[in-house]
Image 1: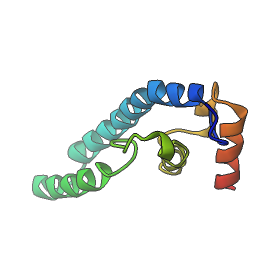
Image 2 (image 1 turned 180 degrees about the vertical axis):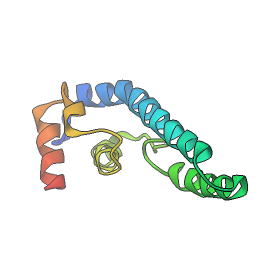
Image 3 (image 1 turned 45 degrees about the horizontal axis):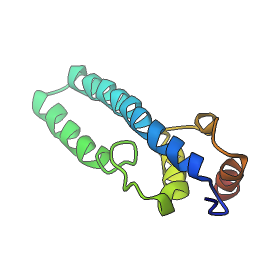
Length: 106
């Protein structure tokens, strides 16, 4: 089924890849959190800094995402804009979807 922007295969591939993208992003966040905790400063300051950071990060599409077919292109845009994925991560998707993403990002 074509939507004009993506194919049924695009949707299937997106669902397959999303959890891996999110896991990689959360792994990156965890490493950053460890740097905060292991850094210089008072333990209480590090704790509250980390608490604020986690509160912000958990709203990122790299952590949680409303998974709907109609929002797939916008979800991809959000993942790219939040540096969860790059355009290279769209290899395997249809040219139509990649062109749509390119147009929106331009």
